[in-house]
Length: 478
Image (cartoon, rainbow, N blue to C red; front, side):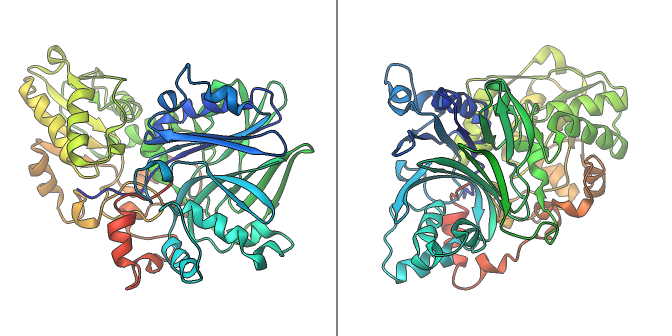
C-alpha cells in the first residue's frame, strides 16, 4: 500500500527563559499530528542549536540525555513529523537547519509544496546540493538565492514562489517568524503566555499545555514576527485577493477536539456533523458507538439527534499511535488490533450504529467491523461523519492514489458489501459544510469533490508524475 504525505505540527516561542521546555510540552500536545520524528531548535540571540531524532517527542528528548538543557535558550521552534514528502529517515527530521549569507535559519513546516519537484530540479541543475529529500529544504535554497536576498522583503518574495500548503515557523538568530500560505490550508495560530511571551502553534491545544492564551489565527498570506519589539505583522499577498481554502479534513480528523482552528472549536464542529449525519442517515438500532477518538464527538452528536443510547463499544489503548499515520498497511492493520478492543458485553445481541470520522482505504474499518461481528453484534450500520473520500490530496494529507481509496471507484452498495455491514451512510458535502460557520467556498473539499483550490497540473504533468506517485504519495512532508 503506498504511503502519502505527512500531517505535521509546528510550534514556536520567543522571549521566555523556559522557551525550550515549553516547546517540548507544546510538541507533546501536537503529537497527534506526527509521530515519526521530532525536533527543537533554539537560539541565544547569536547562534542556533538544533536537535532532531526519530520517534515521538518523549523518546527523542527522553529524560537523562540532557538534550533540553543543552538547547536552553529564550527562543525556540519545534516540529513533529509525519512524512508526506521525503522518506522516513533522520535527515528529513525537522526543524531543518541551514546557513546562508544572512546567517543561520531553522525551518519547521506543516504542509506540502506542489511545485517542490520543479523547484528542486531547477536548483539541482544549477549545482545546488540537497542533504534531505523533503520539500522544506527547498525553502532555504530559495532564501539563499542572491537575487532573493537583495529584495526589500526577501522572505515575502520567497513565499510568493511557493505553491501549495504551508504553515511555516522560522527561527533566525534573533527572532521567530511564522507564515501561512495565501489559502490558509493548514492551521496556524498565535498565543501569549502568562509571562507575556508570544508563541505560535499549529493548534491552540499546544497553548493550553503551557498556560498560554489563544489570541488569533495567523491570517492566510500573513508573516508574523516575534522579536524584542513584540509582535509585528505584514502580508506577502494583498489581503482579500485570495479566497481561503481551509482544509475541512482538519475539522473531520486531524485536529485535536480541544483546539480552535479556522475560528471554531473542533469538538463542536464534529458534534454538529454527527447531528446532521443522524438527520441524513437515520437507523433503527439499539446503541450508537464511536470509533475512538476522532469519531467520538460525531457519535455523541448522532446519539443526541437520534435518541439512540450512546455507549463505548470499543476501548482504545493510548499506547498505540494513530493508525492513519502508520507508515504501511501491515502496520496499520496490526495497530488497529492492538489499539481497539471490542467490549463484547456492550455489542452482543445488539443492533449497532458505528460512527467514524472518515474512511480512507477501508481495510482497517473492515477489520473493526469484523471484530464487532465476532463479538455478537446482530446488525451493524456504518455511519461516516464526512462524504466519501474519492480523490487524492496534494496539500499534505495522507491519501493514497485514487485507485487505493475505498470510494475512488466503488458505489455505496459496493462499499457496504466490502465492509460487510448492513447499511452505510456518509454525511453529504452540503451537510458537512452546514456545520461550520465560514462560507462554503472558504474550505478545501477536494478529497471529496475533486475541486482543487490550486492547479494540480503542477504536480501531475509529464515531468513530475513519476516523482509524485513514487515519492509524494510514498511520503511527503508536512
